[in-house]
Length: 121
Image (cartoon, rainbow, N blue to C red; front, side):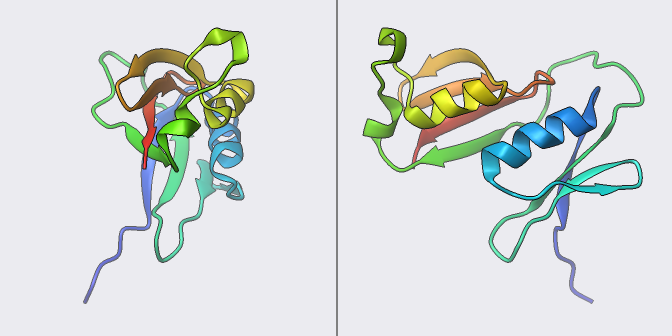
């Protein structure tokens, strides 16, 4: 028997809201399922599942995702004179909170506070 990783599951206070955010970010469909929402993967990308958190968070997330942009130029923008890419500007419009500028990217948080990074690919 061989196994295949179908999805990474994230506990969220508002799973539908967080799934909608990631659906827009990754341009993937959000599929409601019992207990949560799945963003299906494919042969090259793992799925993401968002379920209702049974208890409140007591510590920092032990996992965060790294996304890539196509170039260092994608990390630049003149919007508000900030070092933000057009793609990061789009993510902020979707509900991202910008946390930190990195040497080769930006650290962000989704609407539920889960951290992720957009780095030069």
